[in-house]
Length: 58
Image 1 (cartoon, helix red, strand yellow):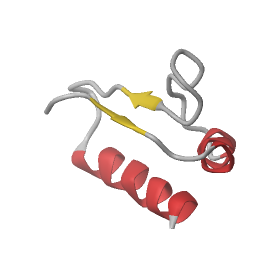
Image 2 (cartoon, helix red, strand yellow):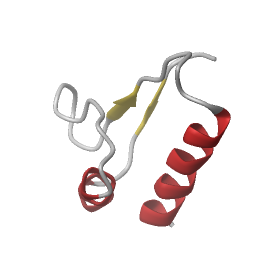
Image 3 (cartoon, rainbow, N blue to C red):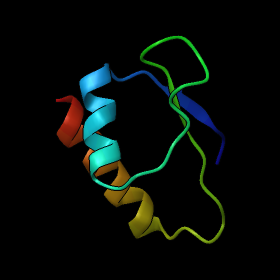
């Protein structure tokens, strides 16, 4: 699985941080984040992250 930058707006970043997700959010232009996963993350972990991203961006 490749890496991909996801550009949510600042309030959405704050929501994900408040949910306890840790991600690179202050290294690039405003609104750009980078999620990095590893082989220790399960498919359920990724699904939960994607649900949180949808919840905070839709």
